[in-house]
Length: 184
Length: 184
Image 1 (spheres, each protein chain N blue to C red):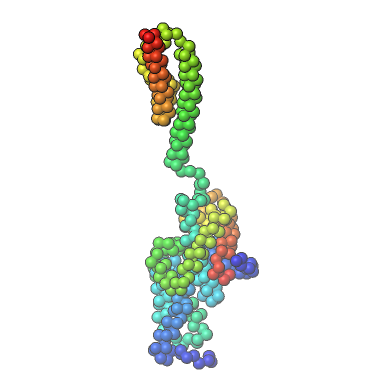
Image 2 (cartoon, each protein chain N blue to C red):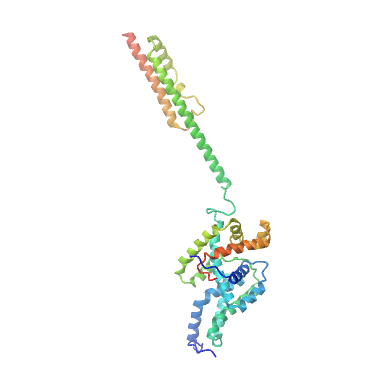
């Protein structure tokens, strides 16, 4: 039996407070996780919204120490269902830059004070990208900036798919070191 | 600040996340999604990687901006190349013309000095003949007759014309002085 929780869901106000608290803590991550599955910020936000709606109904039955894990699992199920129902193709980054509104919504979920850090990260990454060896920079450009598929890149450069993937991996490992918020 | 090197397992997990996010065709996406559902840590790591991907995507846009060092070509575009070559050709012609004009003017000054000595040594009758001949001639006949005499360098033309006028004026004065002397 879990220890008593002050927000055990018996009081509607407590439920609202609990949902608000978890929303401020996890919503951004949940949307990002859902985006990884649906590749659409609008659908990802819908998946997170549905998840919190379900959580509000079921929070009485979810032990406090499992709430976070429950949210992460549920948002994945929601995203998978949305993907199936929407029949969306999995184009990499297809809405990442084409939906500034969604991106702005995502940013408002974060601390506004982080905007400066965000810009600094972008600048740092730009320098790191330009410092990459040409063959790695070429793959990064084709995959991320031009959104080509790996198979297409391999055919275009007349390289084995494994070589393209290896170069991408090396490039990402270098670029990841430029990301101070990366926990890996 | 340089982050510590991640351990191999972390690198492998991160690479699998990247493969998932970048649509690596060799990855079993369904199996990876099942793994995400079973592993909360992996799900959270995917969310963090999407956040990094957003920054990376923005930073990678530098590769498609023409005013920054491009990956594909470091050469000038064709119109820019032609404009540069045309400007260089015009500059070369102008410098050559100016130098030719300058040499021509120097030669003319030397001739003027020689002529002045000759004029001083003229007899009265010779000076009268010379003055009449100079007076009857156009000053332009004394200007440099080079291929660059119609150069846009108006200052050089003006200098040349001034020198010619000065020669005519000197001859006229000499003629008048000698005429007066002869008359007196």
